[in-house]
Every structure is written in C-alpha cells, then in structure tokens.
Image 1 (tube, rainbow, N blue to C red):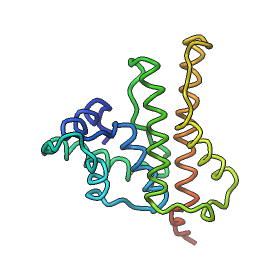
Image 2: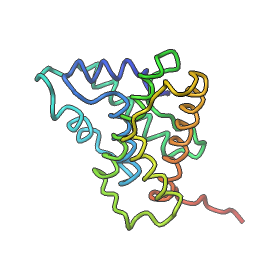
Image 3: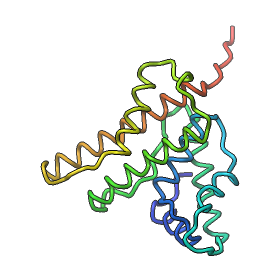
Length: 185
C-alpha cells in the first residue's frame, strides 16, 4: 500500500474545513512518530481539524484517506527497507507549489516533533541535531526561483527532498531504534 495521492489528501482536509495542507499534515504525523514512537490517529485527526474555517462534516471517505495516510506512514517510517516517502505534490506541479509544500511539510514536522515531546536533550547525535535545525531552517526559508535556472532549482528540490527523507529515517532510528533481530547460533 502506498500513500494516497497528494490531491486526495488535500481534498479530504479542505472538504472537512481544515486549514492544514496535505504536506503539513504529513509532516506533523512524521514528527509525532519520530519523537514519541507512536501516534493516536484520533488525536492527529483532531489536531488537523481543530481550527476549521467552517464547521463542515468530515466525510467517511475523507477519514478513510487520512486513515490510509496514517497507516502507510507508520508502516514506512518503521520499516527497514527505507521505503519512506514524503507526501508532496508530484513533479508535474509548478516549482513554486512544490517548494511551498516542502516548506509546509518541514513546518509540520517541527510542530509534530514538539507535539510528540521531543526535547533537545534527546538529540545525542550531532548529525540528528543538525538535521532538526535544518528542517526548521527550511520551514522558515523563502525560496526564489528567479536567480537559478529551473533545471537547477528542480535538482536542488530533489536533493532537499531526499535529504529530508533520509534525515527522518535517521532521526526515527536515533529516537525509536528498531529491536535487534535475534541471532541464531
């Protein structure tokens, strides 16, 4: 099972009146999972809809989509094959939209780390500490596509996405190490 399409998650959130974007919602979930090792789906969904623009009813299909995001993310982030993926718009979308979504994902991830109870003293590895700082920097940064060629900006975006993907896995392994496989003698 793969993550639902970005647009399906976006529709599920906006259809229920949420102000949270699909990428931010996934970032929050990933941050909570890394910091605490688990995520209560109801609590996560409640957070996504707590400051609704309108009190719209959340459809069963929207809840199923969010359930799928939750389930796939929990499975991927704790799987040793490193198949974890970020919920971002696909490459056919404009660079501006994709860059904005990446910044929103990072902002959500930072929020999720806080919601999950991450404290500085928990970050013993310098690489992990630097990664957490980089995520905050990326969420606060504004990107300009005017100074670089579109091809260079595209390549940079791909590299940042991969850095984030691997950094999440490193942070999760640091804070939530997988149990060692039993050795057979």
